[in-house]
Image 1 (cartoon, helix red, strand yellow):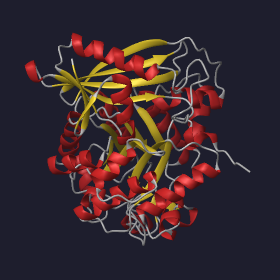
Image 2: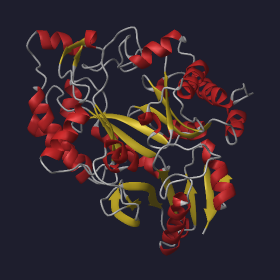
Image 3: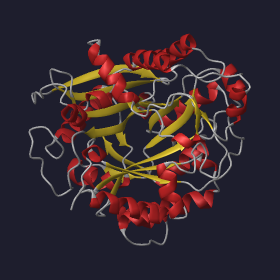
Length: 456
């Protein structure tokens, strides 16, 4: 019997989270972070931790187990998005990092390889291909050496633990980095082609509803930031965190639920169309939650409230075809058109292309960045994504607008037209290892490590 959970692959990929083994943060735990026998910022009973600990945090076994779970649920695993979670991965010993990533590829390939380069080469044509690799890190552990290393890993997305854009609050919560570190890391990552995500935490000690609203607005109004995606984790008091003692002494009080809901509604309405709200709330086991909201269905609550107020969130997730179809919020009009949004971010021009219908439902997108000037000017394709449920690589699209009907090619053709108009010398694509064959065989790009490249 197949038990299918449609949401798992509703965005067109199979996400597989791989948990790092517990290791104390080199700079010390922040006030809100629990220090327990678990990966940093997690609890021993978090679902992902329970799965990983049973497998002794072995990367190969974790990926293998998740692939089997997807198959049991009836999902294809041709296009896998790997997410390495559980701490500042780039702070682990370098040899460990290479082995961990290699083990992930080996599990996807179904066989052991002699080294990382060999594992990546196999994965280009494997049954389970890594189409995207996400790494989480701190803004101050994201320098040139770290970026060079994660490009070698085949990473395409980096999530930064930003939390809040305020140096005074950073001091209060013992964060031990600055807003300038966020600015620098964001720019370096984008200038190397990465898609960039921010983790944001409203309700931290030293903040307020008014301040959180202002600081969140800064995330998108200030050109130094403007991430491609965000995760919103309202502050909660957890067992094992230093904040727990402060709370019991009366030195901290989390937002009331109605205050938090109103704040999050305001935040959602600020998010531009080029950004995706990946997640709202973390799944904290009740036994470890001391204070703060217990509603893990906050996203659903917010969507219902927005509908009641006849307003809508414009983020990518709220507009993508799979979720709109699942929630039946409106009839799906399959007549689509190409739209373009230009904006400046981190010192360069960004161009966001999207296929949408008259109701602004999103079918596919392409994220471009112009880098350099004169003869050294080129264009990055930082993201290419066609939405809808994941199809097997050998499967043809049956619906008018879905994967495998040419939307990706059309977006890339438009990107190449823009590159010519912008007088770029070449296009560089930060491609997942498992997508390299698509760019080479279907679009005429060549591998010039670590990017897929085409001269213009």
